[in-house]
Image (tube, rainbow, N blue to C red; front, side, top):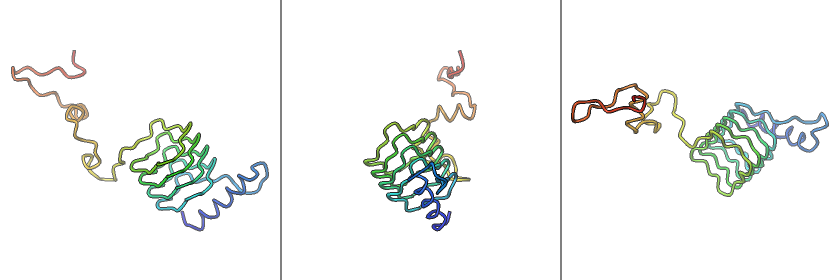
Length: 160
């Protein structure tokens, strides 16, 4: 999203927030928008639709995001210091490395939100921190457990 288009969207949203019953302005529709590194510090994004938006490294410090829909958004490494997320929907959002110091998360739905790093396309799973638990790795690959010293197999979690 270009800076010009973002500015126009925020202006229309501001008009909509002042009086949503009139036909002036429009609620911000930022679904799946590429807002990486965007400067949204202090922005009023209350009720904005930001589902699946890419907000990696964005500056949302002091932003008003009350009742915003951020389901599935990627806020990895974003600066959300002192942002107000009251009653926001953040189901499935990625918040790995996000600065949430002083942020208001009261009544925010963080169900299934993840602080785990999202693997890059084509990156090996181990680099993304998804490997390292031998028991879990074996179950994923359907590898039988190792033999015990007495030669018998250990019982796995699904074996009686």
